[in-house]
Image (cartoon, rainbow, N blue to C red; front, side, top):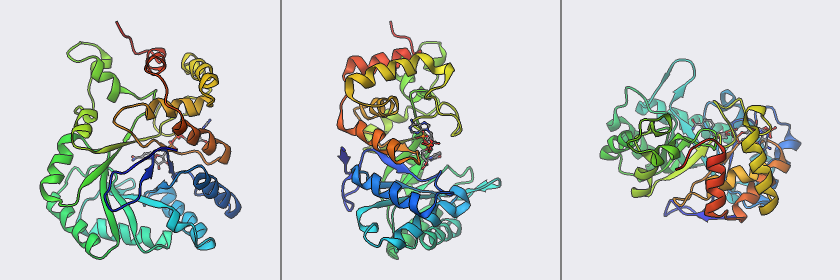
Length: 306
Ligand SMILES: NC(=O)c1ccc[n+]([C@@H]2O[C@H](COP(=O)([O-])OP(=O)(O)OC[C@H]3O[C@@H](n4cnc5c(N)ncnc54)[C@H](OP(=O)(O)O)[C@@H]3O)[C@@H](O)[C@H]2O)c1
């Protein structure tokens, strides 16, 4: 496993992190195996949100922590707030604080290590966010802060008021959803790959030492369609399988190693619920793929190069 240290007051975080969005229906036994497998692989960062499984994901995770009291100290627990499902985004002081209190209760823990603002509130009042973060920090309920799905300018706006460092931005990024990367190779060219949807977030995050956490790193669309083994993605799957043999990784592991090869050092948040697959993606952090192979995967996914 490789580790990075975005926050001064936290231990190093594993570069491969486990996303807990799909664990709501796991049994006690499955949860225990899943968490212990992740820890054995060197994964120490666990990503939640107040809304996953309508709270059930944090709840089943909390029950696992209660069954084995030694687990909590081995983990960095991250959760997110701001989405009120089907209704709105909410960055009000009241909502942020009550969301954290709900997460703490469901997880059964004393403090959240990292809190991310899940999606930008279109009615964002950054002064209120700042007040909420101060209250949460002062009370010891949250140790560190960051954002998710935010543009550079939205982060700048928050930074004008929020005094805690915002060191993480969780964004959708995978080989199949890589406009954040391809736009950098097509500056001022009138083609689709050159459309920049994110305000040059990669460069902004590097300049400001913000770590990008790719969410859904194996998905082609929005969370319900893995590109592995998909007919429509047969070329890229063939390449991932071939290169996987060279590096000793599964195709999934190769797809994660492609993200880990980005020099800014990302934290892919993988969402598998299967222990064997957890091992396979964690192994991606033990290899560094070559520049040639990184570009081969990029080209094979259909991004043209001269
Ligand atoms: N910030 C945001 O807005 C946002 C949005 C969405 C997600 N997230 C975070 O990102 C995390 C990951 O999202 P995700 O679950 O969509 O990520 P993912 O790792 O791209 O996809 C995982 C899904 O792919 C399936 N899969 C099929 N073959 C697989 C293989 N060989 N290896 C691994 N998985 C395989 C898994 O099924 P099995 O379980 O059967 O393996 C699982 O359903 C979430 O848990 C959440 O923490 C954040």
